[in-house]
Image 1 (cartoon, rainbow, N blue to C red):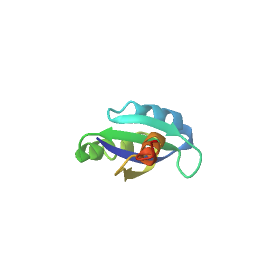
Image 2: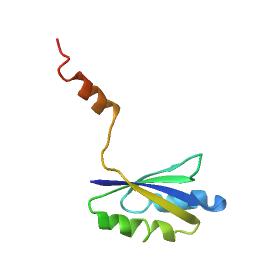
Image 3: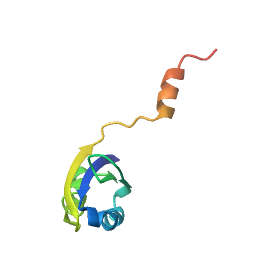
Length: 93
């Protein structure tokens, strides 16, 4: 599974509508509205890199109100559970 984190700038008056349209795209797992430098963050999870090309420039960028996107591909995932498991190895009594 390939995960892409898509940072999205929107027009202020289209944020809610754009977020819902993005969330409805197959391959988009979650969409978060947020404060800071970007308006929305979309988590895209697909099996092939080519699907990202279809989803981001092919679908997300064409939604009314989307002004700009910045896509980041995740190489590895870390979680608290993974970290705790790594540090507990060999520590049993």
